[in-house]
Length: 408
Image 1 (spheres, rainbow, N blue to C red):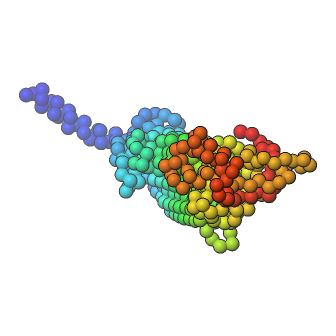
Image 2 (cartoon, helix red, strand yellow; image 1 turned 180 degrees about the vertical axis):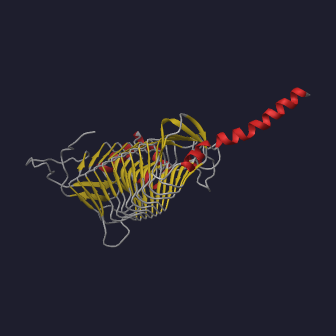
Image 3 (cartoon, helix red, strand yellow; image 1 turned 90 degrees about the vertical axis):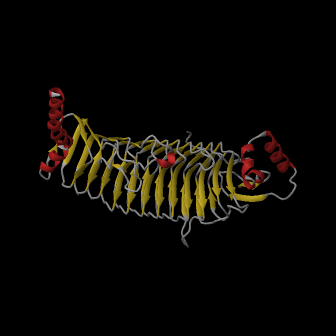
């Protein structure tokens, strides 16, 4: 009896100590003066943590903050703070609350060189401007793809820089109602949309590597976006798309490598705004099932100096229309069968792409399984040899290049 009483007293005495230990990091932050640098002792600390002043929290690569499966790990509700060299883990699982590694509600903050894992969302920014998100490694919780959260999420947030982050097995990086952001040098794999824009204008996307995602980059109702020098590869599956547009105008797609996707570039009623165009220049589209797919016979896109290599089909118009309402000028086509007798680098005759028996797999989705099979290849050969009906002109490039230029 006496022994049990001693154990009970010891446990009761230990409770305040445990509570104190849980809040020790929060106490350090609350006691810090604005502008100071907080460097906790190496170890693991309990979250969630709230930062509401401009301090620097530096884990020096030896500090873990664990939210214990509740809420977000850090709530950053201030301007001018720095979070660096931290391991943030074990957020809650609420999509409604956007449980994240870091929730940002402020401007001019820097979040860099952190590891964020087992957090539903990585970094969530709402109505936050001119923040820097750099060199973080971000992954979501180990659940099915559709149940994960976004690696980086922007909502009504302007002028932010998302650079040099490594993203694995999250859902999307998504940009909602946000403009003037720069997204560059990131490496994202194993997600749904590596990058998804919704109603977001005047953003820049440069030098990213997006591999093995369901979709590389998709723009919905998002005008005046610049997409340059990215590598987008292995977006496969029934809906795999390298770069996609829906009702999107005044976009520049330049210098990208778009490789091994189900569809390289997909266009749905784009450009949408009157008297605008989308400029698709100097890209490499190689080894895709379809190089460029149009939902219908839309107009207003400029395809110049692109290189089409090793695609099963260069261009498809899903409703059976023509892509010739767009400008095709000076592209390289490895299926071109003409000559360059004056050695000026341009074919003597236009490149013309017609629709023959491949209409079967375009019109009947289940027939796509047989694309490239001997059966359809024989039908296609017979159609070209002796067409059963006049073939339909899909596009004409008046000045096709005969040299591919830079290789993979």
